[in-house]
Structure formats: structure tokens, C-alpha cells
Length: 182
Image (cartoon, rainbow, N blue to C red; front, side, top):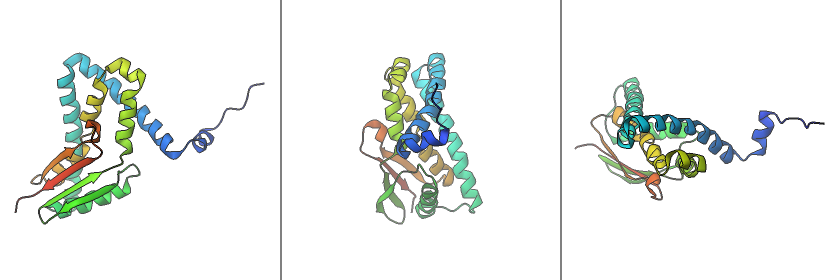
């Protein structure tokens, strides 16, 4: 006699939340990697990475721009950090943010741990993905992980924003610097 199949809720209850989230992220990102494979085959790795990054930055720039317009276009690192921290706190997958330097015109902050970076790394090491991409999977992940820059530049186009450390490059955290001129 066949055993009863577990319901989705029962399967979820058996899996630790972090594992459930990782599996869901990896499943969705496998499609991103598959689409990226098509771009790489058609345009080459460098152009494919550029196109992926452009799409992500442009999309998130529009999101940041819309948020700023809704708030009356506030300027400066204080307005950016206030809204970014609010946004991070509302995202269930938002990484912990630690501010390490803050002045009137500059803020340096980092994020770690990041479940999204962990999922990217695990998927990039998956034998199925390695078979498809070789070492290119992590490069696709890096091109895809540009949302912070796009959103920040959209929120305040006058603000200079850069990532100085990157988990996907092997650093122990992602570090960001946002600056405005005096």
C-alpha cells in the first residue's frame, strides 16, 4: 500500500526556515542562471554580464527614483540611510546592516550575513550549475547582485555610491560607501 504524500505545509514544517528559504532562492535563481546561459552563448560572457547588470541596475534605479519622488525627493546620505534601513527592516531576507562610519556627507555600512549571497554561492557550486557554467556562475551572480547600487543611485542621483567589499568576491561582508558633496 502506497504511503500518504505529505502536504506542502507538512514538508515546510519538516525543514528549518533557513533551508526552506535557501531552496526557494536557489530554485528561482536556477532559472536566472539558465536565462543567463542563453545570453552568454549568444553574446559572450562579458556582454552577457553587462546586460544582466544593466537590467538589474536600471530596474532598481527606477524603484529608488519612485521611492524618492513619493517622499518629495529628499537628498543626502541621511535621507538615503533612513529609507534604506526602513526598507531593509521590512524585507524578510534583508541582511543585517552595520554602520561603521557616519558624517554629515558620508556613511559607510556593511551587510553580513546575507542569505542571498549564501544561496548564490551554494548554487554556483551545485554540480548541475557547474556543468552548465563552469566558473561563470558566480560571475552571473555578481552581475545580478547590483540592486543596492541601482536603488541608491535612483533614490539620490547626486549621491556617490560604491561597494568596496563584496561577499561574492570572497570578502567576509559587503561594504558600501554613500557620499554627497558638501
